[in-house]
Image (cartoon, rainbow, N blue to C red; front, side):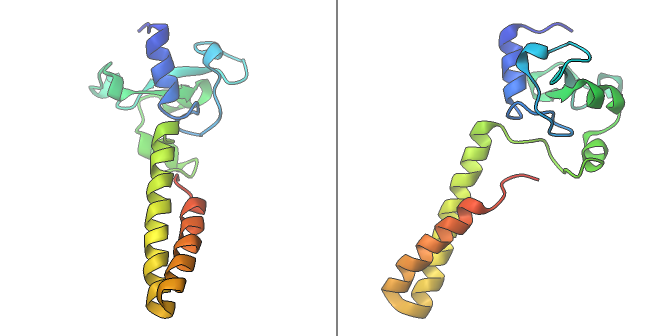
Length: 140
């Protein structure tokens, strides 16, 4: 199937410019090339051989070697072989997840600090929780 440049841009950005299987960085300009650094192809999350469609929600970027070795396998097992459970988050999704972590960390720190040391502890706990929330890994 052929894709427009706009469609390829959207697919490429779905995973923050990384292969959805191994997380290797892929280069937009190397779409469809073989043997070039960062080359990639469009992978069908649910393979067409197993009833998958060409709908945007079923399309993900994959480096050439991962896409071709996946064949009609499922994402869960091929990602697990690389130590991952899900696709990489897009840049927007990662920022949203980090924001949620920061807010949750600040709230938890404030409650814990306030319970043990009153209002000054709540402020210190919130700042500590904020820092911890920011450092929590948002992907795996």
